[in-house]
Image (cartoon, rainbow, N blue to C red; front, top):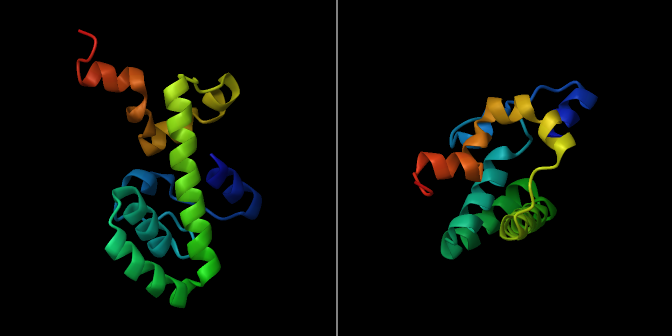
Length: 122
C-alpha cells in the first residue's frame, strides 16, 4: 500500500505485480539488490548472503544494505506476531487495499483462502 501511495505523491508509477513475480520489476531504485538480499535472508542462505552483502555494499552502499536487512527482518517478525495472535486486517486497510491485493495476488496468502485451497478444515 505504501509503495502505491508513494507513487501517487511523487508521480512515479510502480508495478505492484512485481511483488509476487520473481523476475518482475517494480520500478524501485536498486530493486535487484533489495530483492536478492531479502530473499537470501528469508531462505537463510547465509554464505551467499554474506557474499551478496559485500558486493551490494560496494554497488548501492552499505546503508541501503543495512536498511534492507532491517526491514526484511522486522517485516518477518511483525508478520509472525500478527499471524500468531490472529490479528485480522483492519477495516480501513482492507478497504483501501482491495485493488492492490487483487492486482498483486497477495490475497491468495489469506488464511481463509489457503485453508479452502488446501482443504484444511474439510
